[in-house]
Each structure stands twice: as structure tokens, then as C-alpha cells.
Image (cartoon, rainbow, N blue to C red; front, side):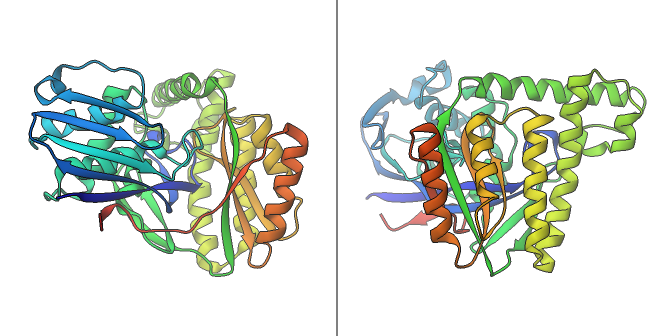
Amino acid sequence: MTRAFRSPGRVNLIGEHTDYNLGFVLPIALDLACVAKTTPASDGRLHVHTEDLDQSKDWDLADLPHLSPAHDWTDYIVGVARELLYAGYEVGPQSIRIHSTVPTGSGLSSSAALEVSVALAMLGGRAIEPLQLAQLCQRAERTFVGVPSGIMDQYVAVFGEPGSAIEIDCRGLTHQVVALPANVEIFAVNSMVKHDLAQSAYRERTEQCAAAVEAIRARYPEVRSLRDADMTMLAGSSLPETIGRRARHVIAEDERVGKFVAACGEGNLHKMGELFLESHRSLQFDYEVSCEELDFLVDTAIGIEGVYGARMTGGGFGGCTVNLIGKGAAAGFEREITCQYQARFAVRPQVYRCRASAGASEIAA
């Protein structure tokens, strides 16, 4: 008997690089998703085939705890299997086929969608606490894949709500549902580039944030993460210039999440758009994780009629922007952003209408 499990990608509306600083984020789960179909096997092996890459790999189940990373897509599979085993879940012999509509390298969290769908497939319908599932998949990415990611991607993949964003407290691991105004649409625009700096710079930023915490804590011992700091504390601490700018982005971005949630509640699209642009400029100049292509997409978008705001989303150095667009302006936006980007970079961007969807679940095979 074949069973199928779906896990969504996500777009983060605001709160970038705050999750691994234990702050606040505001993502939506997408209707773009990864589906893992599992069929029992009888040969003592785990077989996996990815339709998107047309590649297959299999392992003897007894070898899973002893494997080293291969530094390719299979690390997500092995990492999840190992974490399930460590948590006391048996991983039985099976064949898993994977298909995803979440574009890789886009900043829409194809990796978390893969991890969560594969974890559910390996569980085969056995019960697991939703938060445990999200944490287990995050551990797989951190400890086996080697990416020091925060909890946001896996959390929203599990807890996503149709029609709404969720504001996640990345320290308390709780969330509240945030209804989005009915008269706005969300579009992601994929720059179609991913610069080599992405992974090394991500690791560097996590280290810089940790250094900022240590420096601030020397004067303010109550600060355990940048989530605890404010601008007064930052000004009162002796931080090197670059470290100070990194901390300034995170502190201000956490504040922007709260302001954006309030603006959503008021239906204030202009304020929401302003906060989007503030976030992008902070990522561009203080956190320095943008790139020429993302900046061009943002600068172009805010000049198009009906666009309230735009910002990069995801880790940076490529991937997607997220755009707030008034009802009725979508067709003009898609046409104009595609035309201008293609004229500038000779690359056609992919444009996605982002519909907030439910979190991971079993679906009809």
C-alpha cells in the first residue's frame, strides 16, 4: 500500500535572520509543496528516488546511524532517518518517491519541505507531536546537513494555516495566527540566481550575531540572545562596526515584525509596504545579504503601480523577493517585473502567486 505525505514550502513575509537569534518571524506556508510517497519494501533497505533530479539512492537500514554526509540532496534524507532513529522511531524498509513544486535555491524553503514530507513518509502514519516533528527536522539540517538554520522553516511547514500567516516566537516555540488583509496579494519573484556566498555568509552571520550577544552581555548580563537586546543596549556596548550593524538589523527586524502584525490588523497596506522596504534596506546595508539582482527586483517593484512594498526573502545572495500587491494589479506587476528584469539580466524570472496554505499532512496517494 502506497501512502503520500505533503509538506509546503514557505515565504517569510518579514523577520529575516531573526529565527536563529530566537526572535520573531512571520511566514506563510505555500501551496507549492513537496510530496513523498512511500511503499513498503522487504529487502531491509531504504530506497529513495527524486523525480525532480531523476536520481535514486538506497541504503542498508543497519548502516544509517554510521553514515557520513555525502554533501548532496541525500543528506536531507539520511539526516531525517537518523533523527527518527535517535528519537526512538523505527525506520522500516521502504521505497520513497519524491516530487516537489518548491523551486530549489529560491529561498522558499525547499529543504524543510523535503525534510518534513520525508519524515512523515518514514513514520508512515505513526503519531508524532507536531513540535517534535519540526524540531527533529531542524536537527537533521543542523547536525547532518551542516546548515545552522533556525526553526522557522520546519515550524511553518508543520503549523501553516490556510489564508493566514503565523507569527512564530522562535524562543518559546509558540505561534499566533495572523489574518492577512483581504485586499492584498502576495507574490514571490525568483531572481533565478544563487551566489556562492550564500552558505558561507549565512554561517558567518550566525557567528557575528553570537559575537554581538557576548559583547552586549558584558554590560547587560540579562541578554541571552539578540532578541533580548534593544537599541539603547546596542549603543551602550562596545561592538566593532560590522558586528554592530549585524546586531542593529536583527534588533530592528524583530521590532518590524510586531509593527507589521499590527498593520495587518488595521488593514494598513501602506504601513505594511513601508516595513517591507525598511526590512530590505536593512538586509541590504546592515546585514549585507542582498545582491544586485535582488536589489534590482525590489527597486523596480516599488515603482510599479499597485505595489505597496517589496523585500528580499530567505537567506539572501539570490533567491526570491516577496511583494505586496493590491487586488487588480497582479497582471501588470507580473508583466512589468518580468520585462524589466529580463532586459537587465537576460534571465526570465519566475513569478509565483503565494497562497497561504495548510501545514504538512497525509494526502491521497
